[in-house]
Structure formats: structure tokens, C-alpha cells
Length: 118
Image 1 (cartoon, one colour):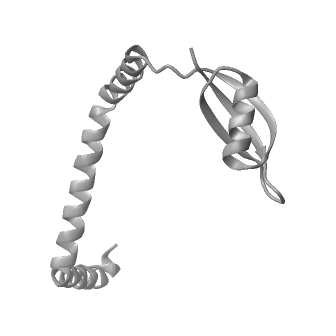
Image 2: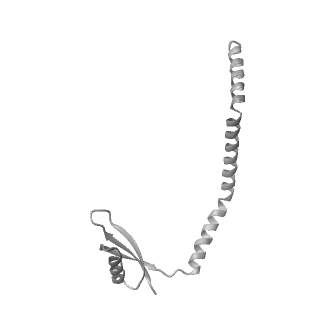
Image 3: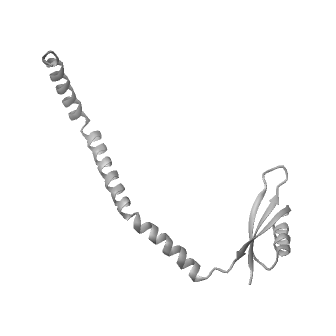
């Protein structure tokens, strides 16, 4: 059974680089593979577990994702309705701005004339 290793490499004059090496049987093999692939000094090797990806792992992550998305479907629908309403209102204002301007002038004039009655 092969394993997955995280290898930290030293970059000359820069930030260290982390790479994942799969299909290794030992820490030494991961160290040698990373050194051969990247040509940099290996600082640290950490075992990350088995690199065998079974269907159960994929199924588990998929089912977890679907459970999360099912709970948010109502919020997604509400968000979509909100975007459609705001977009429609924006298009209405852009298309008929002159009507809104005329209404604003009429209302402003009425408020101006009725200011003494308050």
C-alpha cells in the first residue's frame, strides 16, 4: 500500500515550497523523489496517510456536500428572487428615469408650496 507525503523544500533566496508526493513506500523514498523532481534541499517530510482513494471516501464527501447544499436551497432561492427584483427595479429606473425625475419635481413643488401649512 502506498502512502502520501508532504515534503517541504528550501527555495534558494525565497519562501519554502510544499509539495505532495504520492505512491511512496517510505519517508526516504518521498525525500529522494522530491529532491529529484524539484532539485531543492528537503527540509521536512510528513506522512499524510494512504493515497488509495476508494469509492467510499468519494461517496462520503459527495453526500456531505449534498447535505450542505440541500439545507441552503431555500436561501439560494431567496437570494435569486432578491437579485431578480433588484435587477428589475434597476432596469425600470434606467429605462424610465425621466418619469421619476418629473414625479420628483412635482412632489418637490407640492412640498414647497405646502411648507407653511405644517
